[in-house]
Amino acid sequence: MCEANAYLRKDGKEEMLMEMVDKVTPQEDGLVLEDIFGRRKVIKARITELALVEHRIVLEQQD
Amino acid sequence: MCEANAYLRKDGKEEMLMEMVDKVTPQEDGLVLEDIFGRRKVIKARITELALVEHRIVLEQQD
Image (cartoon, rainbow over all chains, first blue to last red):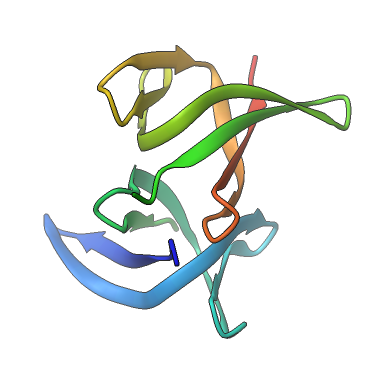
């Protein structure tokens, strides 16, 4: 499976936000992250980096 | 390997933009796509959908 982990970058540090993310879709109220089990998180953020071979999605919070 | 294919969505259709994409990073002049061989493309676009299990990155052109 080719899911990735989503990290939130804050003050130069990265914290794990969600593991095994399959889908990411921007919507009005923020990014919708959905993992391979269909669990969802919505966060006001934007994608700042994808590195798929490393299974990394990096997000940055938006106001 | 967990690379994905990048598609450009235009008028409801999707055309293949780049295969075997590893990294995507937003920069001043647009999105930088890099495939697993290190080849790069820069495009004025934004990410509208990620579906990693399906190996899909969908972009939409920006003006």
